[in-house]
Length: 198
Image 1 (spheres, rainbow, N blue to C red):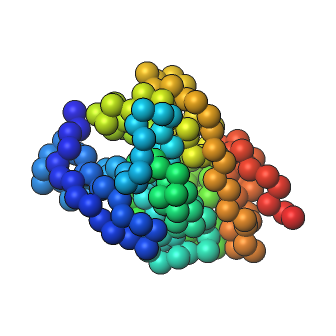
Image 2 (cartoon, rainbow, N blue to C red; image 1 turned 90 degrees about the vertical axis):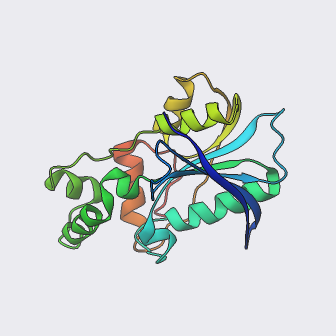
């Protein structure tokens, strides 16, 4: 069972958030995080984003994906409207950064993101959003508006004890490099995206 290991207020360019680290072990260097806006009203449906770690997109601003831009957009939205970002340490759809770079190398040879993972003998997407539900339960959040384009995240909430009040789209416009990546998200994973070819 995960539990709160540490928490503090952290000022960011988007505003100040309460950041809480969750793990089973206090010595875990890679805890999951809850990032909570100061103005969050827990008596109403809470805006929530499940966000999986993406070092290439968030730290190095890779153009291959929209993860960094989605995190920025979610932080801005939640600072303005209240809510929580649950930051999950599931790098590269939970295959890790080493395998992610191997997959990138295969993509340079023409494979898409799913084909590259499968070529490496890995799942197309190995993420588990059950821990996000655990965190919501620990925070006593019972009713949410989920910021997502991913129907799998919606399903996790619908199948849980947390009530889904609404889904809030969080779409980032495609660039010339990310267009194929987003097309795979839409075609293979069924992400709820507008046509990115426009």
